[in-house]
Amino acid sequence: MAVSEIPPSTSSSSGKYDPTPYAVDLDSVPSIQTERLPGPKSVALHDRATKIIRGLSGQVRLFPVAFESGNGCTLRDVDGNQYIDFSSGIYVTNLGHCHPKISEAVAQAARTLMNAHDFTTRVKVELLERLVSVLPGDLAGVQLYDSGTTAVEAALRTCRAATGKHEFVSCFGDFHGKSGHAVSLARMNRFSGATRTSGFYMVPRPDTYRPWWTRSDGSLDTERYLEYYDTFLTESTTGSVAAFVLEPIQGWAGSIMPPDDFFPKLRAFCDEREILLVADEVLTGMGRTGRWLCTEHWDTLPDVVTIGKGFGNGFPVTAMVVREPYADAVDKISASTSYGGNPMACAAALASIEVIEEEGLLEHAAHLETLFDKRMAGWTQRFNIVGDTRVKGCLMGVELVKDKQTKEPFDEAGRRIYQRAFSKGLAWIPAGHILRMSPPIVMPDDVAHKAMDLIEESLDEVQRELGYGS
View 1 (cartoon, one colour):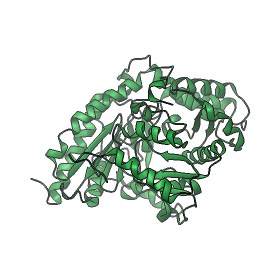
View 2: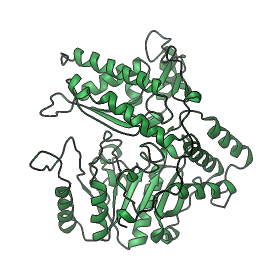
View 3: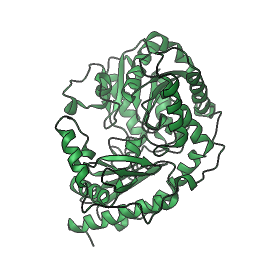
View 4: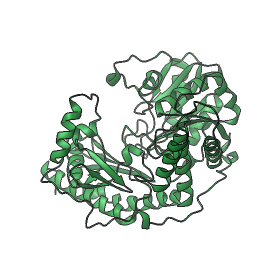
């Protein structure tokens, strides 16, 4: 479908953002009550957990705090320390913690009906109708799941059923989940111990800070990437590629954003070769970047979309959505699940969509993008270890380097800055030499500025400790 033919969403945010419900007393948040962080109760609780649990994330290993409660844009640990949440539970609680409308919707569903497998319920129908009303174009065939990985796996099966082809192309650095085929899309072998499934191929994607191919003026050359893809398809695949699968913005790899011409050109590239385009919007969708779908920023309509994380604002609910021409293919893949469309999940997702609309949060996320962009605009000049900053809505990344000419990654700086800011009361996300930030899209301006102050302080202190300060 040509860009000019893509109809916009039929529903837009009609509310106006009101910061009052999310107001924070900046004299009391962050608030560090213990002599050091993590506090003694966090340490004791974490020690109990690690006698049993295995496979903790890097962020927990670097800062093993034990959280007890959350409210809006703040978190409280078991020692009574309060933090500004600049992670949203890894891109999940887009609407902050314990939003009263969402909490009540889940509670009401739990009091009424907890599960009915894939039978129809009123709340499920209302969710499905509301979801397709806010999504762009003819994205109209939906199946509900309980994890992003499951939605991605269903998307792959749908693409095979729709095209009769069996191979997939994805990108280095993307992340699509932790089960068999999702792992093969993302090259997680070194973590999972699994071998790549045959018929899964990976190619480089444009990174404006670290481009593989450039024009004579040094700018990234998107056309060269597409030329490489064309050659790769001819020489490295069997010619049976069902879909090109990728994240609109890379999350796990460090908030890496494509040039603005990449997705429109990739859409045309796929159409010319009768390859479906799958956008994994589990991380980027549902308002995170200021649009329902991140691909809307580039007027690009994927054939298949996966959404999750912020979809239920913390309740485990995800979805696979396909364009109308391919909707019948979903009927061919045994798509239903035990938990995906349960009434509690549907209630959480429906309430989340309503909150975004009623409170004008797409517009507020776009407003916060401007605020964060202005705050980070001078960091590459101010800090000797900051090589690049990037922001789209409430999705940000700061790339740390040892040398701005060679762009050598500075992992040690990333580790220290993450821990330093956390010790000041900022809960956020590490990614090696890239600092990732994903604040709730309900965050008031003054809280956003306070969080950025903490990051700037940590950047300045750590670069001086490492001998890179001026």
